[in-house]
Image (cartoon, rainbow, N blue to C red):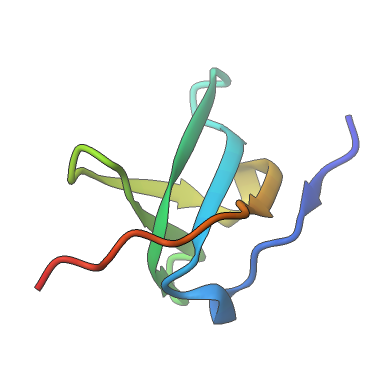
Length: 76
């Protein structure tokens, strides 16, 4: 399967969508605001609409893209 990740660490604050493989081999998806990129862990941290924080390992990303539309305001 070809991997296509169009999201970079420079896309902070943008609404993103990822489909990624978990360490146990299962697939997961997340849509939300890219809060930060943890460089040492090579992991994206995405704030979901319910306020949760999803960790997306860069190596596991199958598809990643910027989602069009207005980003939601960041919580203070």
